[in-house]
Length: 422
Image (cartoon, rainbow, N blue to C red; front, side, top):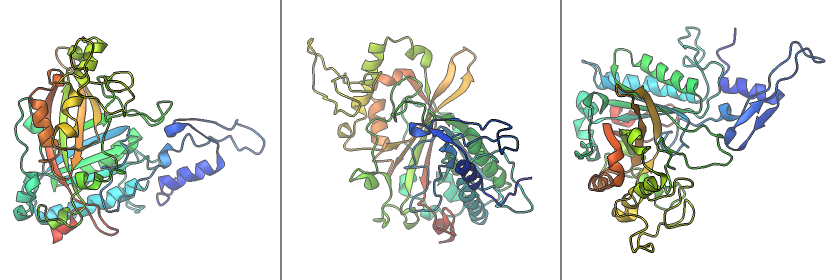
């Protein structure tokens, strides 16, 4: 029986040291197996399939993982409500337990850390870390339940109502929010199951959603991902190399009084389950779809020409005198320079939850965006979209959440420790 004290990462690294790894750009790979019965062989062996499983993201740091981490191919979102009678003490114990488990899993180690009283389901026993990230956030109600109302950030006030909302309250909000991402489905589910089990009597699941993205290495070269409408989704996302990236995405490490001190280095996540009305969308000709978005479908370039990253020429007109990019095109409306500089880091997952009674796909986007202040990021953009986005006819916002995501935990600390013990 395998020794639980050896991490999955170490096991995978050992296999790779003696085998032949066949890799391609982005981590796509096949495998080579040594022939059984070959000279010196004791039955043959398989070489490592890929380096993908060895990818490891650090849990401890200035910011929590899962914000600037490249988006993974599998995601789980889960919200909990604190159980009746559970308060600050129980919440602190839970976050301490969750943080320790997340750190172990992200390092490719078992849930129990090798304890003889093993309590690991072994779902991901054979895998490496696979770029696993676990991110924790607090909802509006968390502060009332823990008696910490005075520490609740003003930025966590409920989002305004939007005319396109068709929100299911049972799948919205929550006291605690967890985002899980990994490049292996079993690794992601392993983390989901471990954290749900460890919630125990302290918190109960309010809602849970599953998402996916294109697998790393599935394309011949690195590309911006496509959504379920077939559109390239994520062009012109803020980049960590931008001069103002930290200012837009993270709360200052020395808060200016707008945010409480415990949010230093943190961010705010807006989560929306956006259903795409694909049957209606797919009836449109490609040209009509492109006019709704304002970009070419094949390569994501603006309708005014160039490549995906070419600046859109908003005033350019065609031979008929009409604007090439329509006034209500989604890409025009969402540009920061059309919204007072409002910007957010979009990091979504697609989802598909089967087909409804009409036979229409229940599919779309688990939209997740990050910003230093949702009132300066998500809200102004969504308000403008609400007033005349051509895409609105083909989407429906069905669930929503807003969460304060503290900065990262230092070694030996847990997420939210300054809030809960301060």
